[in-house]
Length: 266
Picture 1 (cartoon, rainbow, N blue to C red):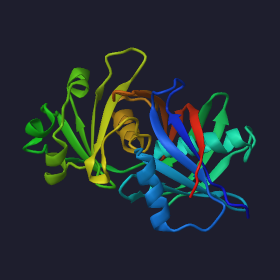
Picture 2 (cartoon, helix red, strand yellow; picture 1 turned 45 degrees about the vertical axis):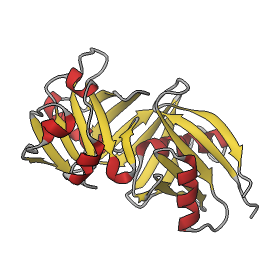
Picture 3 (cartoon, helix red, strand yellow; picture 1 turned 60 degrees about the vertical axis):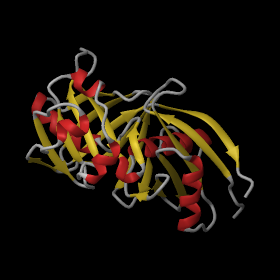
Picture 4 (cartoon, helix red, strand yellow; picture 1 turned 90 degrees about the horizontal axis):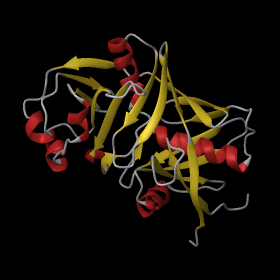
């Protein structure tokens, strides 16, 4: 096969440039090493870079932060799907099947929206961390634990989410290195808001975190008594998601646009 040395940067969970969450995407048609992919992710210095390996009937996908490989990533999956459709590797009316370490994923397109089918994450209520206010800046009303070491803290108000200023070094030291903070939304157009911090993965604040909604969707579905919801991630870049709980699966819907493509010279 001809070597493919093109890498794309895509803004995911937005339809506006320089908003949402940026992901690197590379379609790989050669054998590459783990170290090579990790170095490319470090060079891109985005929260995630995805590597797509076309196969006969599906695509293998791997995700890397600047410091480590992760099993699943929502915004990089959205970005990768966007590139597959944009390059014509799949027609707009065809589904995409991804094989990721964390799950098998089915993707489809609906007009300008890309719909991703993810697994629902289990959540379990836990005690409120005794140092939480000192580490993050507010007193949560509830806390939950999920898989991949995620901890979820629910705030009483949206402003507590918006104005939180976590101590990222201490978050990692105190067992909160993968933290979601969330609350009801003040807006009638949005059901809940969220911010995500992952200093343990080399990402102090993730601009928009699709996979976090694998846990947030069942949590807010129970609290709000509805299965279809909208979410606004209150990072500096912001991001907008539509989510739906389907039994043990979570449908995550978002938009994306390509910012640039580059030819690698190595």
